[in-house]
Image 1 (spheres, helix red, strand yellow):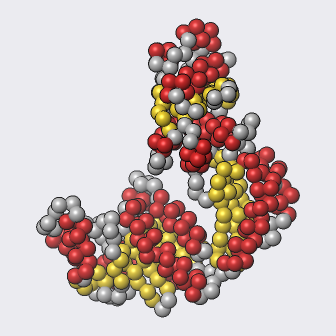
Image 2: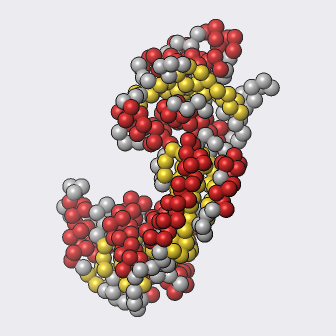
Image 3: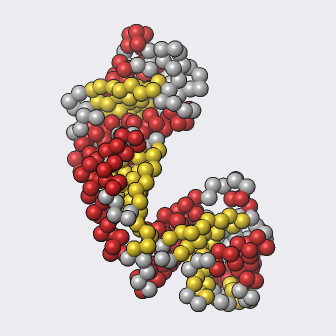
Length: 419
């Protein structure tokens, strides 16, 4: 198998000021090519620490992928440290200078500083990789068939270089050398707890044929990861497909997609195909549910809009919830959730109306309605109803789980399942 290690450079990562999302993204993409990731490491902006890490990781890897420290400031040490590590010298590359000038020219800047011109100095032993989304080029070193790639730490720039140069290079190495792969498939589920899911799949675990099956629960559902290690590309694909079919035969109604697709994205595709629409009325989630729809490009095709009805006045004056309903049953109740869902559907003339009203805490609970009490309503052309949930956790968790359950209810109603 092609072994990849990942090195992240930067004090801001080391001390926790910035979460290392780059390493997670790189790992996922490398695995999708069939490579196996053997180690992540983070070091600060210290030359000796960087050299030690490069030396240890590169000795045990076919590819070492580095992010961070390529900018024009004094604390960007990756380029000079790699130059020292390879006993190399910096040379001025006119192509890189033109790349940098072109980047600034697109922003109306004709003259660039000497500091930015210095980005055109690159180690003589590397191949510069054009960065269309920034000024610092990537640096590719090839040493006896093993590679080191240094990339900027800015996520969008790193992803551009990975997608444009690195991932195709890794894939070619695997294919050309006929290497075994580390392969996996993610199957996304909703509306079923991890324990019940495991019970339904218990007999399949005896038919994995050498594969690994992992359960990855979250507030949004349970992901199933089918994993094959050290098999040929063809054998891994065949075995994963065989087990995948067994899984679908057992729990197909709970599966909404594969790979990285989100439930809101799946819902959006279903609504678009059916030419249906949705509107939302939110209280305790304060716009999070609407945000799940609008973060998907093209969601204006099916997401009409919503009302954040945090106060009772907005519930009555904008959403049309009856004052008597609030007085008799309270803002957090089945009756209020039903009226919110039905009225928002009518206001926006949408196919579906979703509502969320609850007590996210940490205060506001009562013995009869403790913190975590949430009612989620859904209105369709045929019926309107609400479900009660009692969530545990802090305010953020309760709000996140509320959104996840609302999306799940909508998904099953679009499918025509009574869940």
